[in-house]
Image 1 (cartoon, one colour):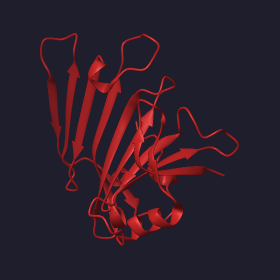
Image 2: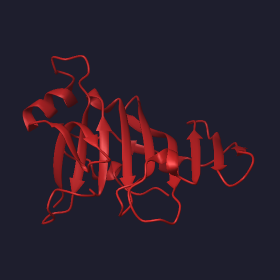
Image 3: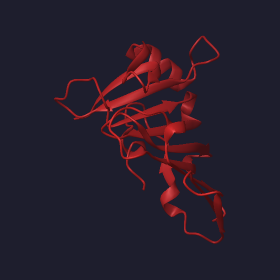
Length: 172
């Protein structure tokens, strides 16, 4: 069973929570009942039995009532590899943006600006998709637009509190 670490914000560089939060406070934030205006929270997921340190399976940033959810997937060096951005559209979440960072073939931690390739894909519910590829070894950025795409896989159910796994999966 997956274990979760809750915090105000996750330190990607440090691989640990910043300002850990207790479960009742996280529940209040999720329900939109927190006292402070900046009431989003982070969730780091760990497989059962693994010490909760280092590189988690995924990290989510969630606003009240899951109006927005950001999913972060890291590689074995704790470098940010993928970011998936969801927004609530009535009773479901829609994946409206995906970013992939590819790093030089060197071990160790690097921040996203040190990546050698950045691919950004944006989506609209009407089937529109825009892909932007910045290969820093090339003199220009390439862009493509697509219409009438099947974006059925971009839709997710709004999570119940504590049921985060479907938002943490790899989406390519």
